[in-house]
Image 1 (cartoon, rainbow, N blue to C red):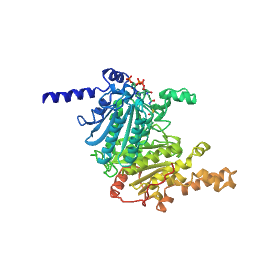
Image 2: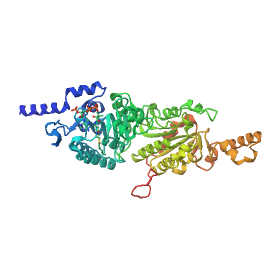
Image 3: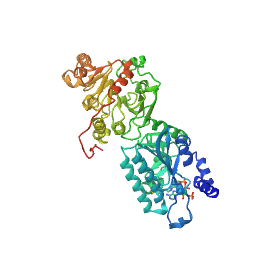
Image 4: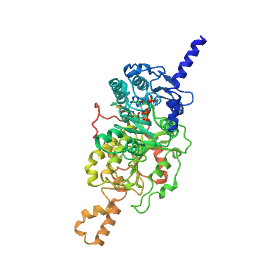
Amino acid sequence: MTDILGELEARRDVARLGGGERRIEAQHKRGKLTARERVALLLDDGSFEEFDMFVEHRCTDFGMQDQKIPGDGVVTGWGTINGRVVYLFAKDFTVFGGSLSETHAQKITKVQDMALKNRAPVIGVFDAGGARIQEGVAALGGYGEVFQRNVLASGVIPQISVIMGPCAGGDVYSPAMTDFIFMVRDTSYMFVTGPDVVKTVTNETVTAEQLGGASVHATKSSIADGAYDNDVEALLQMRRLVDFLPSSNTADVPQLPSFDDDGRVEASLDTLVPTNPNQPYDMKELIRKVADEGDFFEIQEGFAKNIIVGFGRVSGSTVGFIANQPMALAGVLDSDASRKAARFVRFCDCFGIPLVTFVDVPGFLPGTAQEYGGLIKHGAKLLFAYAEATVPKVTVITRKAYGGAYDVMSSKHLRGDMNYAWPSAEIAVMGAKGAVEIIHRQSLDNPEEIEKRTKEYEDRFCSPFVAAERGYIDEVIMPHSTRKRIVRALFMLRNKELQNPWKKHDNIPL
Ligand code: HXC
C-alpha cells in the first residue's frame, strides 16, 4: 500500500513540474509566474482542487508520441476566492508553450461545463502559443468547443480572462467572448496574427508590444478592461473583482459587511460643481464619496475617459456606477464612450447588479470623424442598453443633461426608477448660447440683445425645475445627502420586478 501511495505522490510531483526546471526558470526570468503559482495566488490558501492532472495528449504525428507531459499544458480545477466557489484553467507555458491540443481543450471544456452546471464564475489564465501546431485540425476543433461554451455561458455565469503572456490565434477569441479581459504590462500581448504575418501581409513593421501589448489594448482598442504591472498585482485585483460579482444570473449580488455609515453626509459635495459651467471637476470624487469606504473597481480606466464605469458597493451590496467625466472632453458622449458604457450596463443587467448613474453630459460629440465612425449606432447601443435594463436604476444629474444625451443617460423615460437632480442641474434641449442663436437668429448682430436672451433662457430652462415640474425628476436633492438618498432608493427598490416582453433575443445595434 505504501508503495502505491508513494507512486501517486511521485506521479503528482512529475505533473507539478510541468515542462521542467529549465522552462520554469525561463518563465521566472521573464518576470512571469508559472501556472500553478498563479493558481495558488488567485485562490484562497489550500482551496485548489485540481482536475485531470494526468491527462496526456494522444497525438502521434511529428514524434509527439515520445513527448508527453502529464497535464498537457493547462492546469484546471476549482477553488474559492474569499470563500466563494470559482472554476479556473491556467495555461502552462512550460508545456508545449501552453498550446491547445484536443485533450487540453477537453480539460478546459470540462471546467466550463462544470461551472455552468454549478453556476459559478470561470476564470481563464492565458499564456500560450495558440493551436498545438502538431495537432492541426484537432486543435481547431478543440477551440470551437471552447468558444461554443463561452457563448452559452455568457450572461449566465461571469467569465473572466487574465492574459499573462503571449496570446495569439485561437487563444484570443475565447477571451474576447468573456465578460472581462485583464492584461499584465510588458509581459502579455494579444493579437489574431503576430508581427511576422503582419510584416508579410501588410509590410508593416511592429513589435509584439506595439501590435497587441497592454499599452494598446487598455487604451486604444478597448479589448482589455484593465492592465497591471505584474502577475501578483493582477491576480490580487482579480480576487477583488470577484468579490463584487454574483456567482450567476440567478444568484443575489454579494452582500459584504459594510463599515461605512449609510447616512454619511458629505458637505464637500455641495461645492463639487464649480460656479463656472464650463469648468471641469472630477466625477470620480462623487463616486468615491457615495461608495462604501470609497472602494471603486474601475473598468476600462484608460479608454474613453469621458465616461467612467466600474463596481462599488452601497450598504454592502454591489452596484455598477456609470458617470460622465467632465475632466475628459467635457464628459461628452462619443462612439467609444457609448460602447464602453453600453457593454458595462449590459453586464450589470445580466447579473442583477443595480445601476447608479451620475450625469453631466453636454451632448453627443459633433463632427465628421464621429459621424463617419458610426456615432448614431454606437450612441444607440448605450440608449438600447439602458432601455432594456430591468435592474434597479438610480440616476443623479449633477450639472448638464443636454439633448439626446439627457434621454440616454438612464432618464425617467428609459424606466429610470429614481431620478434625482442636484440644484445645479441644467436639463435642457441644448446649452443657452446655442438655443438663443437658433431662436433669435434675427438678433445675432445685436450682442446686448443676445446676452439678455441668453440670460432669460438660462434662468428659465437651465435648471432642474422645468424637468421636475413634469415629474421627469423625482426630486431635487442636496448634493451632501447624495449617498444617503442612493442608499435609501436602492433599499426601496430591493424587490423590483420588471420583465421585458418575451423574445428569442433582442437585436441591439452592433
Ligand atoms: C506547439 C508550441 C507552440 C504551438 C510554442 N510552442 N507555440 N508548440 N504548438 N503553437 C513551443 C515551442 O516549440 C517551445 O518548445 C515552447 O513552446 C516555447 O516556445 P518559444 O517559441 O521558445 O517561446 P517564445 O520565444 O517565448 O515565443 C512564444 C510564441 C512562439 C510567440 C508563442 O512560440 C510562437 O510564435 N508560437 C507559435 C504561435 C502560433 O503561430 N500559433 C498557432 C496559431 S494558429 P520547447 O520545447 O522549445 O520549449 C491558431 C489557430 C486557431 O491558433 C484558430 C481558432 C479560431
